Image 1 (cartoon, rainbow, N blue to C red):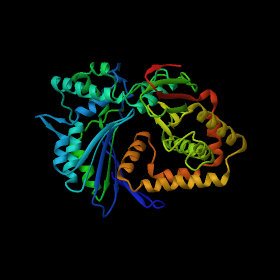
Image 2: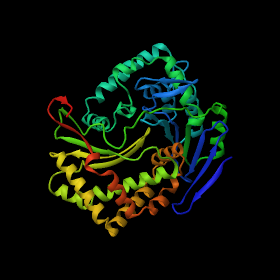
Image 3: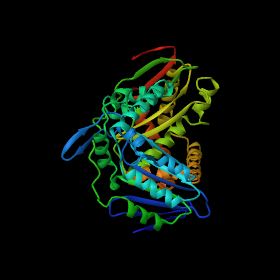
Image 4: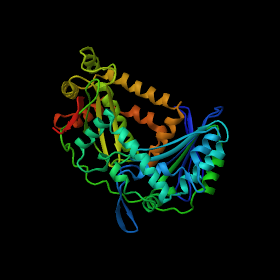
Length: 430
């Protein structure tokens, strides 16, 4: 049954329901807005390559989830759902990450007709041998192009530094070799396992009717309620990285690097939300724009405007990272570790922490103006069983001591790995 949840502090509300088939539905009303958005996602991404099917463990090649996303727009009879949505004035797209595949559109008119089409084509697979072979050629070209990107090389260099066997090591799109192993039967099997309603979330935002949306989902989607698939990501390898250094030479204007460390994985619910917010706040205090460390490194020319930090939790792993352009990446890492040690020893200055916390609070509030941001974060929260709209409450409960403990545990020299792309050609592992 649809239930209204109200969040007075942030001025938001959300209608929620879990249908008999297991689909989790969230409708966020935005009265008076012309734009409307729908976001339909499966808890299935590039890292979900080993799963249980009919009492047997199935291992699939890298790239199946991404390949499936490409093929789901094909409709029996030769039509393409993306073309149809565009002809109705909707802006539609899809993406595959390591932990999810999402299909979405935004429009001002014909929202319910577009939603009906979205639900139908995502839940009704149609593949042929010829169309799969054609798509193999298209995706192969995409893979070859992205492999020439320095940002791609430096990111996967870091992931392979951190993890020895977890499937996040492999690109979401797979390789030219791995996608050659994909056929219609494999796609149908993966769709049957992961595109079941109990493994999916539907989010809609705008001046829309939650009852009409629920009724459409109830009418179109399968009735069966299968339990989520058992999946195996392998061993994350403990707290230490698989290796400390990766270096590659490419045609770049300036060296780029990405350094990172593993953090606590396997969390869900409110514990996951709190840990991720603590991690992001700790990194902001340590090296965010306007922090003492960032200001020093910038003034000395160690970093420039490309410097950034991130925290990622996905597919059985969790890690922090920071990087950008620098002529001396190793020196940047030393400065970060030294500053972390200083904050751990001396404590985080309370006034500076409070400013960072207020800044993070403001960032979350501003995010509520973005339909894309709401859809994505409500979906992630749905998969991980926490309430996205309680983010600011959790954020306010984090203390400077929580940040100090995070830095003490995860910003240590023996835990930090670095991936670097330098100016030249060739490749080497150090």
